[in-house]
Length: 311
Image (tube, rainbow, N blue to C red; front, top):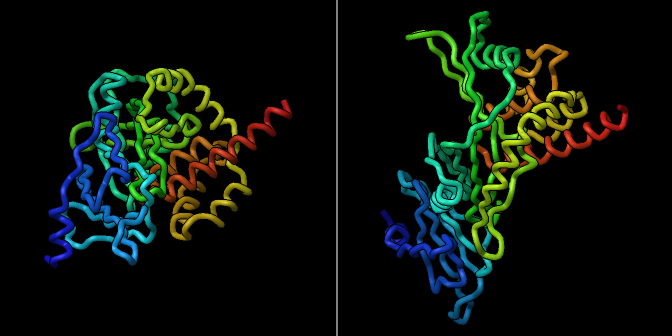
C-alpha cells in the first residue's frame, strides 16, 4: 500500500450529526466517510498561497479494493454528504417496520439501495397472463403450470456522493414469480422501478432528511391506477427509435430481442418497463437508470395525453 493510500485509509471518520447530514463546510481539511461497503474520501483543495479553498476533491473505493478511483469534478463547501445507511435507518424510524431483503451496489461515485419494509403491503389485481409471459421471457421455459406470484412495494434509494445525483427515494413494484416444486422450483424476482416513478422524491429539504408516511400511503393507494395507465399506453415504434438513439448498443439489442417475444397486442409500457427493469438490475448503472426513468415517464405522459384527448 502506498503512502497516499495509507493516508486515505487512516483519515478520520466524521461522526454523523443528529440529522444524518455531513456538511463539507464543517470539514477543515479532509475526511473519509464509510457508507456500508464503500469509502468516500474528501480532501479540501488548497489555493496556491496554501490557504484553504471552498472546494474538495473526491476519491472513492469499495472495501475489497486497494486502488482509489478519482472523481473528475470538485465539490464546493455547499455540498452535503448523507450516508445511505443513515437514510435507511431514518426511513425505518419514521415509517416503522423492519427492513427486509436489503441489497445495494455502487455505480461510479453513487450508491443504490433497495429494500422492503414490513407492514407496507400493496393490493393489486391478479395478472396471470403478465406473470406467464414474463416468466417465459426470463427463463426461456414455455410452461402451462400454475405460477405463484406475490407483489410488494420496494423502497429504492439513490445517493450521489459527488453531486452527480440528488438523494432520492423511488418506489418500485416487486413481482416474485415462483414455479415448480422442490428441486424444480424457480424463483424470479422483478422490481419494476418505472411504474411508480411519478412519486419519486428528493429527500433533503432545508438541510433535513424529509420522509413522510403520507407519501407512502399515497403510493399504496395509486398503484393500481398507475398499472392501468402503463398497460393502456402502447409502446410504439417512435419510443423504440428513441431507445435506439439513447441507449448503449448492446443494451438496446438485448431489450429488442426480449420485447419482440411479447405478443404484439400486449406490447405496452407495462411489459416494456418490466423488461427494462430486469436489464437495469443486471447492468447496475445508476446514470442509465435515471436517464431511462426520465425518458419513459415523459413519453408515457405524452401518449396518455393523446389517448385521453381522443376519448
